Image (cartoon, rainbow, N blue to C red; front, side, top):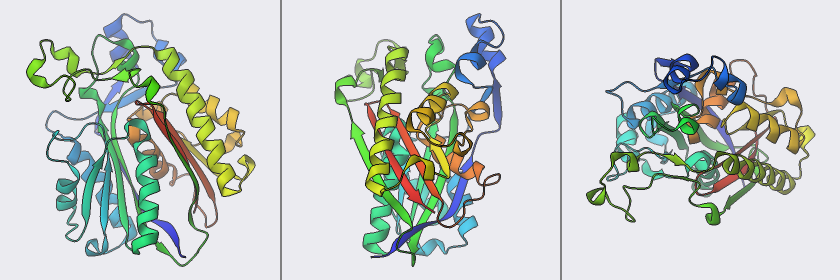
Length: 326
């Protein structure tokens, strides 16, 4: 058996910054309302001429360049997204083509906010089994799925991309040491886009708002997401034989600052291990963890042997956690 290492990190956030004041004015909220409840100061929105693939390519290219790896050696691209360029075909083959990955397979993974955790887990296994590097990109353009009259989603969601490049390692203890994936379909309808799928195709849509996101019960989403993220992280740590105090870097899904703080407290990680980007970049669903992983590397160097704990939960409900040894 061999290990797996991250040899490249990448991220991209669109240039347009949307401050809280812009959203607070739209909803008639007092200044500071969003910051007090979410910890978010601003978020990024994609330009009108940008599609999901444009963001994904920028993050993926940064990860590959950082690694200095020949693009011909990459065996697989996993793209975690809920907002592909088109419903058909999948976007990953286009991203792979634009990145020059001539020998790589490519597939989209629609795991909502937990999409990166799922993709990372599968990528680690692929690297171990096939001895080939895997590029994982998580990206979303959620600004085009926000219902402008729904406050709950308008204050949170954003656009961004993050990427990690995994490769075989001679260190057997590197890579994922423990993982737990979970799903609770009983809560399927808490976060949803009602129309556009096979249940209600576009041909039967009378109101365009049915193709936008609905969060029916924000308090229920918060409570269940906290429980799912905490529970998955505890199981992953137990599988890895590692205690919370050993975690050097804790990178939860950046849903909002209150949630990340609560999950960190319940798991029992050291407060100084928490890495967060939600204040400046908001919630870009699956992209938040690799985005934070990449941005945080500039301030908090990842050293060989460091334990990184990542956990997420989102629509579906889907969730999971990964314990990664750097």
